[in-house]
Image 1 (spheres, helix red, strand yellow):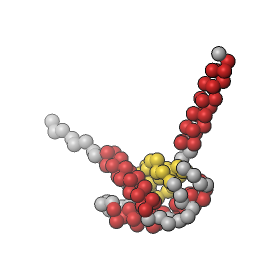
Image 2 (cartoon, rainbow, N blue to C red):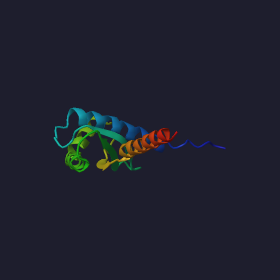
Image 3 (cartoon, rainbow, N blue to C red):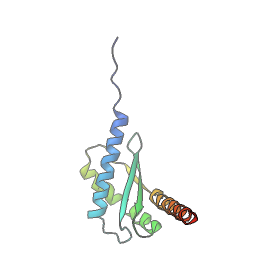
Image 4 (cartoon, rainbow, N blue to C red):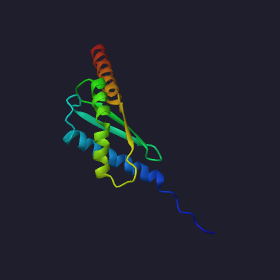
Length: 124
């Protein structure tokens, strides 16, 4: 009975997404000069199986999410060409930016927990 080789496609997708995340972080920090894009953190990248599209989730330290989103979408072609020079794959995905509110929600939850703990301490 012949053993079939497992497909490495899912693993490769994760590696490509991870590399895109690292390269985009560097490109945005060093080469992007758009004033609308400030302190951006790339949280995650999801790549479609055919590498045609990549959803890029980002968060902000400061600034307006809508303005930053517009700036990133305007610079998507520039960032894609920068990725093309760095990545060694045939198809560099079209970038789709999405504002990720996870860190915002985490900060809100931490504030609520701290408030509950302090009010409980005052009751005792």
